[in-house]
Amino acid sequence: MTTVDVTELPVRGTTYWLLSDVWNIVRRGLTHYRRQPVNIAWQLGFPILSVLLYGYVFGSAMKVPGGGNYQDFLMPGMFVMTMAFGFINTATVMVYDSTKGVIDRFRSMPMSSSAVVAGRGVTDLLVACAELAIMMLTALAMGWRPDGGLGFLAAFGLLLWLRFSLIWIGVWLGLLVPNPEAAGGLFAVAFPLTMISSIYVAPQLMPDWLGWVAAWNPISSTAAAARELFGAPGAAGDSWIEQHALLMSVAWPVVLTAIFLPLAVRRFQRLSR
Image (cartoon, rainbow, N blue to C red):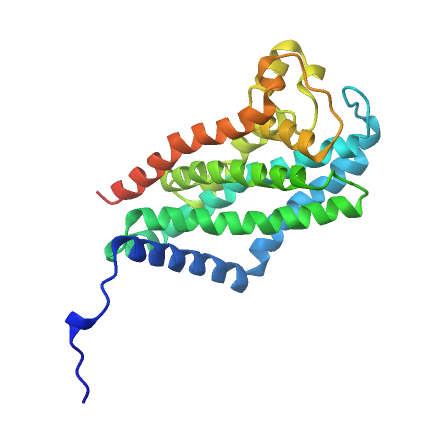
């Protein structure tokens, strides 16, 4: 029988175990998608259907400030909508794990509490990459032709940056709501969040007070910046927030992450106390 001297085993640091825990959470999340393809089909099917409906049904009736094709104006907004609605999926997964005792099991293990939250975030970002890729392929099939080069990559990065910040809102809400049915009601929050924005209509075409609210909506900055980087039509409004859309598309997610990431971690740590 071979004996092993434990003193000769490599010593693993805190960072190693944190990354290992995060990877295990990510692998678990991706395994669920592989074993339950209906879930990812719904996540991808809804935005694709929305693109087709808004692009073809409403496209001929909508105006674009400064002129241009409405489908070209719409597509960057639809990418933003997909990223914005993602926090509902995050919240649903978190509340399901919480009510089924999975979170309690994680808490009973010798693992970092932040690893569970971070693992959920990494999983959602990977899914978001797949969502954006499929959405863009759908848009290309409809005739959308963005400017290429660094602008395209920068716009893709801004969309993921927005999704990253909204993940923590989803995690926090998922740990607050009592059951999966209540998590489904979060659609009532996401719907006005996306409708009162520049995703579908430019704020300058709305009544003054509503246009001001839409312009200061964080997702409007990302939509305007994405249009600029993709080379899509849509003249920016005269307000400061619209003239600095690129700057605010970076700043807004920083603010949201700084607020909700600590809240999500703190809420996880306080569960079952």
